[in-house]
Each structure stands twice: as C-alpha cells, then as structure tokens.
Image (cartoon, rainbow, N blue to C red; front, side):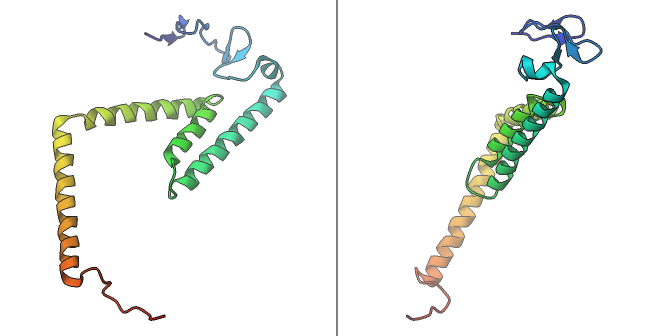
Length: 152
C-alpha cells in the first residue's frame, strides 16, 4: 500500500487532510497529536497532556537504560519509550523513522552472502581459539583452580 502525505493530497491511508501552514489539520487537531479531542480543545490541557506524555516516555526510556547492563530487553524498552514520545513529538517520530531505516539497511547487509560467510568464518575462528585456550587450561591444571584455596 502506498502512503502519500504531501501538502496537496493529505494522507491517503488515513484519509486525513494535509497540514496547513499553522501546523493544524482540519478539524482542529494539532499536527501529529494523538491527544483526545477534549484535550486538544484547551491549550493548557493539551500542554499538560504533552508534559505527561514526555514524563511517561522518559520513565520508560530511563527503565530501558537501566536494563541495558542488566539481563533484560533494554533496547526494546528504550524504543518503546521513543514510541510513546512519538505520539506527541515530531522529533521522536523523525528519530524512530531514521532508526527503522538504519535497522532495515543493516538487515539487508546481514543477508548479503559475502557478509554472512565472513561472519561465520570469524565466529568459527573465535570458537576454535576459545576451545584451544580451554583445552590448554584443562591439560595444564585439570579441573582444579590454579590458585591456593582457604581451607575451612
């Protein structure tokens, strides 16, 4: 399906009108805002909505940053927080769009047979080296640790 969103035609997938010069869409909806209609009607309420969305996204991104060194889906949680921000903020939508494009490009590069062959070769060499070091350690020390242990 082709999605077209330009100044003259609007978004053909959702049927929305194109954005006008004052950054609002016909019907009074702020460009890009996913806030309910009653929130969009009041400027102060809409600003409070945006602050809440920002804080919610910040909490989720912060949790993702905490999960990066810990066992857990850190990057997934960070991108989820960016998705929350993208519901209200154009800069987050642009960042997510760029990230999606880069991930798609990386996936295409990873599917290249030459790159796959190189990665498999490097992995095999690394595993062989690890097996060699492990074999040397077992031949030299056996299953005992090479440092003195305290007797209890």
